[in-house]
Amino acid sequence: GSTAPNGSYNVAISASNGGTQLVAQPLQFALVQGVIRGNSGNTLDLGTYGTTTLDEVRQII
Image 1: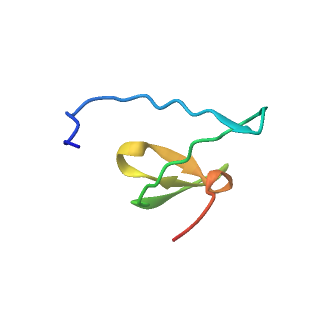
Image 2: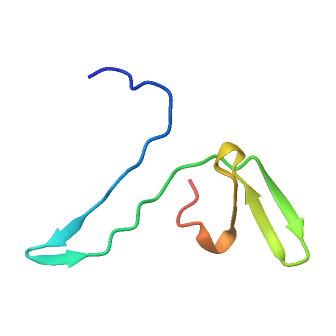
């Protein structure tokens, strides 16, 4: 293979078990740059990926 050029890419995922279509949820890996404390709770600053709330985090490595 070769290195893909810089730019935006879209990913499409389909999953099935036998002949049954399943719902697949793509996930992403991001480093936490900081924690933003707010009146409605804390959010994580993920740098170029934006921000997210702790309930959206699936795993901490």
